[in-house]
Image (cartoon, rainbow, N blue to C red):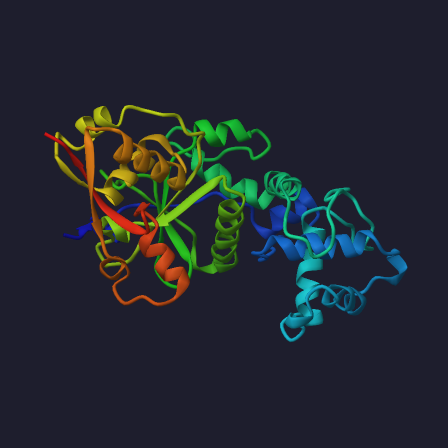
Length: 338
C-alpha cells in the first residue's frame, strides 16, 4: 500500500537561504560560483597536470593533450571546453589562481591515472568542507524553527554529524526544488525559486560528492512506498553518524508495536530516521542479527519482484538499495520468532 503525503502545494513555503550572485561577488570576489563537476578523479588528475608543469606552458589544449595520455579511449568526450569546465572548477575551489599558479598543495602522494587513494579522498573532503557553496547547502540540515539561517563559517563537521536533521527532497521537474524536514505533521515546505535552477543543479553535485566521499546517505523512498500527493518520488538524505550497536528487539518493540513480520526496507528506513547510520552498515548489522540471533529469522524475495522491469544499473541499484543480501538472495522481511 502506497503512503502519500498531504498535498504539499497547500502548505506555506519558505525559500532556503543561499547567497545571491551579487553577495558572492561582494564577499568572495567571484563571478560564477557553481561548478557542476560530479566526478572526482578527473579533478585530481587535471590538478596534477597543472601542478607538474610550468605555468607559461599551460592552456586548455596542452592540458587536454596531457590528460588524454591517461584517457585515450575518452578522447571524443574530453573536448577543450570540457577541460575548461574542470580547470574553472579547480580555480573555483581555490586550488589554483587565474594564472594556473597552485594555491593549495594537495594530492601530494598521488600519481596520474591511478585510482583515488584514501589520502585523495581526504583531500576531497577538505575541499568539500572548505568550499562555501557546499558548506552553504550543508547548513540547511541544521535549520530549525528557531534558527533559519546559519553563518557557514560557524558550522563545524561535528555539528553536521551530531546535530543535523534528515532532509526529504522532491523534484517537481528535472531537479530537486522542494524540501521537507519531516514526513509527519508537515506544516512548511522549503523551496528553491524557479529562477535559481543553477542552485538546483548544484544540489545534485552536492549529493554526488557527499555520497562518493561516504559522509552523506541518499536513497529514494519507493521501497517503503512513500510518495507525494502528486505521486512524485521522495529522496531521503542526511549526514552519516558513526554506527553503534543497539538492541534490535527493543527497537522493533518500540517502533513496530510487536509486529512479528517486518519489511526490511521499512525497518532500515526507521533505523535511518532514528540514528542516521549508513545504510550499508545497517544492512550488515541486520544480516548478523538474522544469522546469529535466535530471536530472528527471515524471508527472501526474488530480484524480479523488487526491480519490476527496471534494466538500467542505476535504477536497479536504487530499487534494491534497502534490501540486504544473504547468500545472493534479497531479504524482504525479518521475522520475530515466537
